[in-house]
Length: 246
Image (cartoon, rainbow, N blue to C red; front, side, top):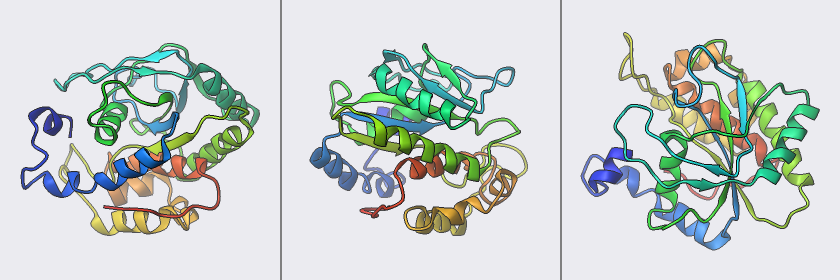
């Protein structure tokens, strides 16, 4: 996607169905005008590699700079952080007995930057401050879907008790089913993808009946990024209305 944006390939036949799904998202953001984005994503080796892999990590920095993790992708704009809200979220998570890694200096890679480029393609600077929450989807042992939903619900409690008047948007990033390597390279499972999309809003409990290993089997090694979506869903609270899907 980053390469397609860089090459201005949005209207090419391969990419057009994807990019055609984005205008309703942009319209919704323009209408709601959030001030802060709490973003669940996974790091691709930019900050955490196989020798140091936190299960959950929360950024508490004043700024987050994008960097290329080795794919030759264009570097996108930096983000302004919201350290006060980050610390509030961290305190809630620790109070709920989540053992997290707190990062007062952290870079962000394509998993976080590209979704914002998709959402705000014409922005000279990002219109939201950032609270990034990274989930390990790279190296076993992986957190369970159930644990990620609980993590998100803890974040929801933090957002509900926050005394600021900012409008907060919650974002879950990453792909649905896909695998980049091994004997199943190129694998996708549209039935599982539709199952996730059908249940994410109304019945997230359906997504957490599987183990992380089940998700890898169903969705591919990188399809386990659905954990980010599940955590984001937990952060939205119990009642949620689906507005758009593509």
